[in-house]
Length: 270
Length: 251
Image 1 (cartoon, rainbow over the protein chains, first blue to last red):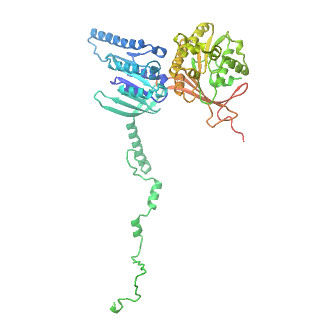
Image 2: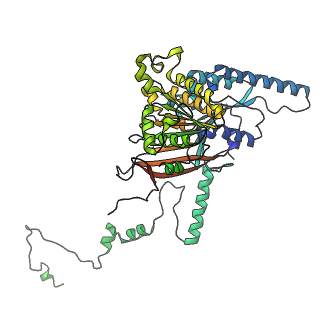
Image 3: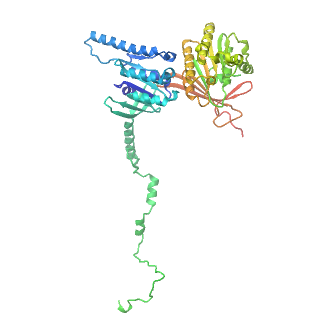
């Protein structure tokens, strides 16, 4: 499931949608959290025209700290229960909607404050390039990618890529194939898919007796039928020499040669 | 006269979706859709309509309506209200409120205020209410920025969410340069009608193509959408609809 890859320890999650799923962005992220059992502590900003009020942003931060403090108080009173999770998950409106009402500087500042806040467990931001009409949209998106610790890129209906930045500095970039329905988002690592196709190719060799192409090889070693025929029809230079059946010496005299018709060894009586 | 085009677009019902957007490609004219929808809404008894004239003045819609078989003047001031920006500017010149930004409001904010005022006066008395805006791209010509137009549409979409029986219908000529604004407005609603030109060129029996996209269901990870394509021909007194492939060159 996609949620296993997205709902991790990485704090700032950016989803870049190259398809057309912007209208279900908030529901999409909420479903990921729900699948991982983290739907209790989810907070989001009001959408639409309410985004023009800076107070909404401040209220969200205050709500996070208040709810976190309340949870801490409850856990102190019930000290027998182990403390497992702290802070809340925040689902931001889509980047296109944010840019409609706020400046890029304010959005970056707010994102940074959320990232540093100890009351925030995760922040989710959705960006669809085909909806970003800010003149500097490319730079803004790049800035968000820089801030994000996990970047999910929904490339096509069947493929996605995931860039993960770990606190130690390690970066991994993995690609996956996906199967999407209205209620499920299944993913398979692309390497597994390659293995599967390799095993399928091996099976094909056994069945047909004709070797199939090796998907993992750098060079194309196998020949198809036409190439085998062409190779067999070609005569290499050294093979042409071997074609002669008798060991005749063929000599073509030059114009200046003083060629004597008589046998010079006639007197030897050989 | 125009029933077939409304049936094809799914706009022949008494209750329409909350937000409908008409995208107009460069070099095609989708104004006939506004006239068709206006005629359909006026025929429903006690259904209120607000026409925001930006591309043409009201007289144009009256003339078009007469050709399509309805007289909009009968309904004017009763179930039909009009915000005629062009006529106001022509009458009042630079003193027009659309040009001099009174109260520090921008053009789009002023327009949103006027629409809200009309809605407050008329919505309660009507079984349903439709706001028709033709055409958003004129706002760019009047000095509004892309951001202001997007905020204006967002405000309209919020109105549609707040009022149960309210439908907002917008049209935007994207002119091949306002595609991003077009996308952003279209995502506010569940129905998008794209008026497209024929890729093969000009044909005397067909004017263009309508691509009707409707979101049927929003799932958790994907949307269920329907796409329908029809060809149209705007005649003098009616609009004809053809299925793709139905009409062709006769040899």
